[in-house]
Image 1 (cartoon, helix red, strand yellow):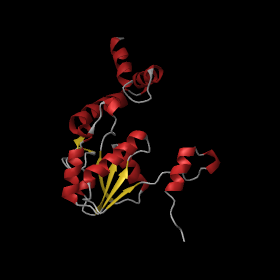
Image 2: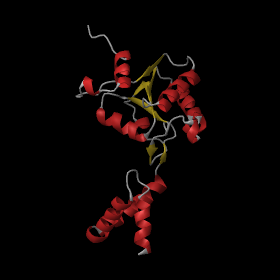
Image 3: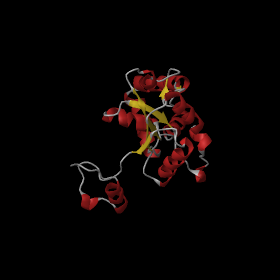
Image 4: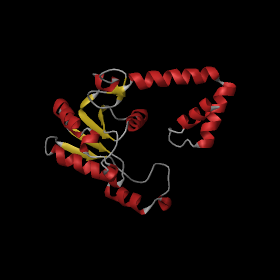
Length: 196
């Protein structure tokens, strides 16, 4: 039973997976899908051993340079700064953006011991010097830490980029204004644009 207990604990490293969910996963694999469990284990070992950060953008990749940074059809005039690899996936799945990315893997948070060195901001400066984009798109989350990170980045790049923009924040598509909180409405009003 010790192996089962260890596996139950191991699954709990995943976000949102507690004791009960972990037990259900482990028991399901043991009772109904041993081949799937073995495949999962093999893929986890191979992924943890072979996936690293891209040398240009810090996104996850098996190669020294990720597929996005290797794509000659991307728009080199645009560089989008995001907090996580999940943000890159979200932008790519949404479509409409064809520039390059730089993944911070976090945001400035002095209380958590996360400063500029932990985010690889020196690598960001090198990437900007190499790419020389016309526009830097700051796509950090609209949190206190995300806003502080965006502000810090604008300070370290000085005037080396022609245009620095911030993604718009506001009322989500398909929602109703009466249910939006005050902060969301304030951002929506501040980010408004002319349509005629």
